[in-house]
Length: 172
View (cartoon, helix red, strand yellow):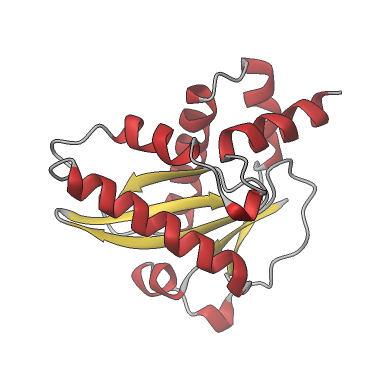
């Protein structure tokens, strides 16, 4: 079991009271728990999901009002897409998705990870704005670009490489 660790903005948007959420537990999921934050774009809101272990990230545009169930279904769809972009096999995708077959929604509390999550969300917003907004940008290209950039938190490796290493070690 794993957790989606939501920021105050996500809790507010989904009408969840943070004090009513379960505290996140450690997880055996290969990519760990995932942080979710809300970022504002020119045409509305988007949710940015970030792995606590590899900083692998993706963005999902908000359609209708979000609920915990919709957060999880959006997470699964986005995770599959970003792993496919990374060139991972169907067998690996199945293994990773099975790690997230059940989970909780919990408050995000680790400030050092939240700092990285905020920076990643700001990067998504800046890239989208620079490319002319949601209607004109190529979200897949932006996701690839952000996940290919080195990070100090990852000892100057990038999220795609760290994710591949984690998935490879889990497969052996």
